[in-house]
Length: 296
Image (tube, rainbow, N blue to C red; front, side, top):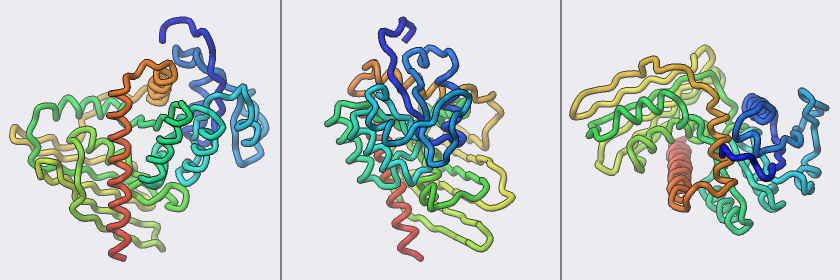
C-alpha cells in the first residue's frame, strides 16, 4: 500500500453521524490508504448541503454514478441491510459499520451477493484494533481458561434504530469469540424497565472446552460507558483492564484493512476466517435475542 496508486476508488459516505464524520475526516486527510480513495460526496436523509466542502448527493445519484465505486455505510444499524443490498446490486464495493445486519441469514445472503458481483463487503470491527484488545490477546494466549465475565455499561440506545442489545453490543461478543474461539449459548435473560430507559441483558456462554463465560450489557440513564472484565485461568487471574494507552486512528486502521482488500492483498483463507467469525457472532446474537424473546 506504500506504492503510488495507479487509480483511485470513488467513495460515497452514507450517514454523517459520529462514525460517518470520522470517515469523512480520514478520507480528506493525507494517509497512505486515503491516497487510493477519492471522496465524491455524502448521502444523508437530512438536507445538509455541503459539509467542509464535501457535497451532499442523493442516494439515487450515488447508486447510478459510475464515478462512485465504493460506499461507506455509516447509518443506523436498522438501515444497513437495505443500503448494502442496494449498493452491491449497483456494482459497488461496501464498507459497513458493525453490525452489518440485524439477522444472521441476511448477512449470509449479502456475502453471497457480494461474491456473485465480485465486490468487497467489509464489516468494520474497530474494537479489534484497540490497545485494550491487543493487551488482552497477549494476556490470554496459551492460557487455560477456567471462567470469565465481561460487563459493559452505557447510556440507553434506541432498539428500533440500533437493534436488540446482542446486536448493538456485538463488539463485546466479538472480543469474547476472538479471544476464546467459537461459543455456544447456555442461557440469556433480559430485564427491562422501559419507563426508566433501563435494560440489563445477561448471557451465559460456553467455550468449546465447556468453560463458562458471562456477558452482561447494562444500559440506563446515568450509567457511564465502561467495561469490567474478569478472566480466571489455571495460571492466575486477570481482573479489569489496566490503562494500556490511547486508541489512535482506529477507524483509519480499519480503512487500511479495507483498502488492502480492494487491492487483493488478503488471502482467501484470511477472508474466509474473518467471514466465519462475523457470521458466528451474528448467529449467536440472533440466538440470544430468540432466547430473551421466548421468556417474555
